[in-house]
Length: 64
Image 1 (tube, helix red, strand yellow):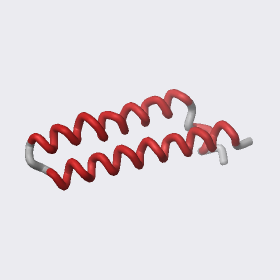
Image 2 (cartoon, rainbow, N blue to C red; image 1 turned 90 degrees about the vertical axis):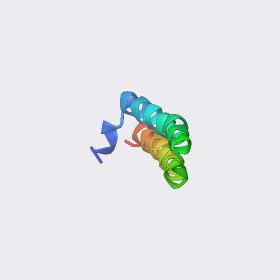
Image 3 (cartoon, rainbow, N blue to C red; image 1 turned 60 degrees about the vertical axis):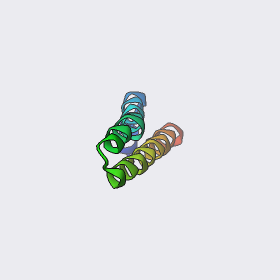
């Protein structure tokens, strides 16, 4: 349970920024380079990363 408390607000902000970059910026670069499958995977991984970090941050706030 102590591991969950390592997810503080700075880690949360870092993970959300990384997910946004992966979802929006990197996927456009991949599309420009005609890597359509990689662009799709980049979007999926970015969204999963954002959702996962939100869940972990919420769990760390509301757990004792």
